[in-house]
Amino acid sequence: MSTYHYEYSLQTQKQHFHNITSFVEEALQKSGAENGICLVFCPHTTAAVTLNENADKDVVGDLCFALDQTFPDRKEFRHSEGNSAAHFKSSCIGPSLTLPFIGGKLKLGVWQAVYFCEFDGPRKRSVFVTIVT
Ligand code: ZN
Image (cartoon, rainbow, N blue to C red; front, side, top):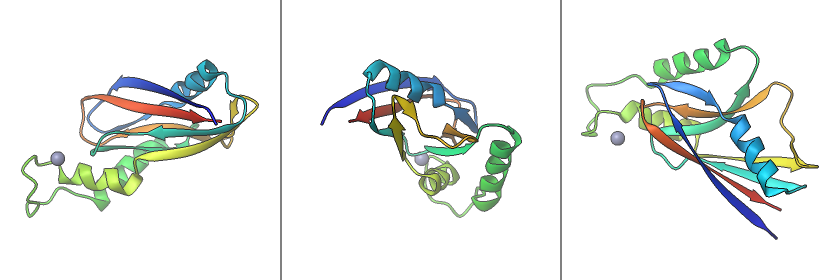
């Protein structure tokens, strides 16, 4: 078994889904790996990673809207930093993805893209890509 690890950074907006598919494809290309799995990991508690539609940008906008409706800020929250809603969104979406690749290419669905999800920006963030063959 071989592993390759890459770290990327990005500057985020307040709340936004950033398409980071190119980061993952670049890591895969650098590794030279042919077949295996790729772990995409978000090392933050108010951000996440997910797969979703790459064609209509309104889809990720609607996701942000729906998350705001599901996890509104509440005066009853006790977390002193004041960003509990962002923590809930992070846990709901999740910190990692496991993606297959074959022949050096990610096996994403036609309409899928990899998104870094910011819920408490703007911040400088990191995302890790680990390739396992
Ligand atoms: Zn916090």
